[in-house]
Length: 292
Ligand SMILES: NC(=O)c1ccc[n+]([C@@H]2O[C@H](COP(=O)([O-])OP(=O)(O)OC[C@H]3O[C@@H](n4cnc5c(N)ncnc54)[C@H](O)[C@@H]3O)[C@@H](O)[C@H]2O)c1
Image (tube, rainbow, N blue to C red; front, side, top):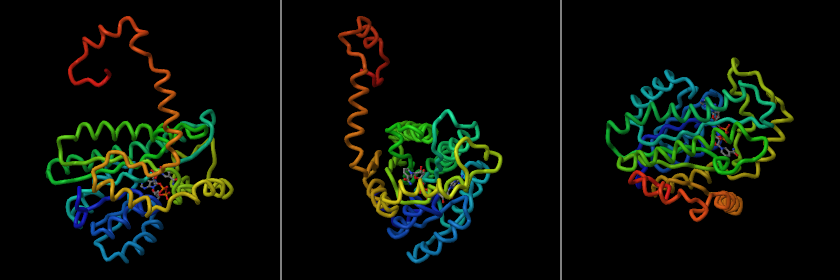
């Protein structure tokens, strides 16, 4: 999508951090922007700043894990701003610690927001986009955790690797359509994700990690406060959308780690000369398959 001016954007998690940066940058580029967020205080603060761009903007309170509410929010936004052509599946949460401490509720909360939230966005908006047939773009925010596993990040990493797989497959399925697809993988971003547990629903509050603990928040904030500013990150996203890039990976500091991971995988992958059955399997392959 070369021209984002006049296009309607729907940004989940648009009240803070990465999503707010996307809302600001696209509003400044002339898009009409709806921010959707579970936190009213985040929406209120964000709207104050978004209104300074002079763009058409609106806020909608939404828990992206609630499918019915999501469809209603989409109707509300489209009635006010027009058909959504840019979907930013950005809202996400995190809680860290060893997997052996996790409760079912720790798993469920993160999977619900980080994975089901993205799925819900696609289920709600993709049929509308395809039916209308105009140029659209979907940006799914994962993380460098979609490529890199680190100790203590198991649930988060599980969700982000899933979002990567989902996005890569979606791009293939939509290659002949007018809907572009991008996967955004940030490293550290100076956002408010350190206090993500504040949005945790009551029925999933049982945790093996931490709750609204100022010490935990301060420790987590230290990791991200030197990270990229959300609007800087969002300018990479704007370019990625304009150039229809599948991967938006604006963190060169991960080059070495990614090379090492891929080298380790290649070293583990069997070689044809070591497998006497290889030729037969390849000859029997379905045309169009990719494994050769
Ligand atoms: N901050 C980082 O270092 C970093 C790094 C890599 C990836 N990310 C990803 O960026 C995305 C945005 O996170 P952020 O860092 O901007 O955090 P943030 O907490 O600043 O913003 C996330 C927003 O999502 C909202 N939200 C949470 N649960 C929601 C729900 N169920 N429904 C609707 N809104 C909900 C929050 O209220 C918040 O306003 C996430 O997907 C996160 O995993 C962040």
